[in-house]
Length: 338
Ligand SMILES: NC(=O)c1ccc[n+]([C@@H]2O[C@H](COP(=O)([O-])OP(=O)(O)OC[C@H]3O[C@@H](n4cnc5c(N)ncnc54)[C@H](OP(=O)(O)O)[C@@H]3O)[C@@H](O)[C@H]2O)c1
Image (cartoon, helix red, strand yellow):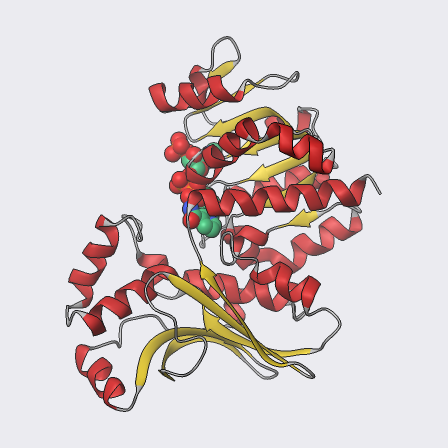
């Protein structure tokens, strides 16, 4: 399997490390022998149709900050679409930054890959939040695989759990906590009686929040995940504009204290039921399985026959998310070689 990799940050580099270190296991267990033939970051790209040396690739990025310096095969400047269109490969792995305004550069990368006959695996939420119905349709029309399990829950398989394990039951609704940054902030505000600002700077110091946390605090990151679950699990063709989205601006220490007195916690809940899809702060009883602390995520599926089934796990991390990409690549390979 020849792979083009767009984006070489935490997820892209962890993917390269796993492929470098566990090559034998993939060949032995799955007959899966991936080869990365092109990589881009924001400052350049490199291509070797015989397969890039992953150790050299990782060292180049660590030493120079860009893959453009890969010896003999790198080039400075942002790659244009010909990198995806013209490089011979079976799969695009799209792991550039999530952009909720216009989805770029991920949206064009994914469209170009599908149009040129390549399967796509992505962890980038932007293109899915804005154009998931159209992208699913394009992949189906082209008879190509399009997988994105790392977009919701990083390594915790919230999507696969629903689409594989609960597939025979009927899922009537979904609700839960899908953003570790805001959950950490709410947990710290309540347990440590600190302000949102202080809790946010703690989260940033621990690497749980990005330098610009706007998408998390405004609820957009949770909303993007609700859109993905709605489309993939419930087959509801929603986009970001169809959701009611309220972020963290109404939270106060007083509200958290009052809720605690009633054995409840205030949580940022993403929800889809028969009539609506939303993201907002809600009081949740301590005994509710989605009432998880810190950076944990929890998603509860209401099913017709099995009742409420909840999956809990870490929702972020470069290595965890890269493991979801591997899961998807093995799935894609299994399907297109069937
Ligand atoms: N990390 C997680 O826990 C996690 C979990 C779930 C989903 N995700 C999603 O997975 C994706 C990757 O996450 P990450 O943590 O790896 O992010 P990251 O560390 O910020 O890396 C983003 C990568 O995209 C590259 N990039 C940005 N603009 C580009 C452009 N125009 N052309 C080519 N490359 C470009 C960056 O280049 P430079 O290296 O030059 O800056 C960087 O290599 C994001 O969409 C994120 O939302 C991440």
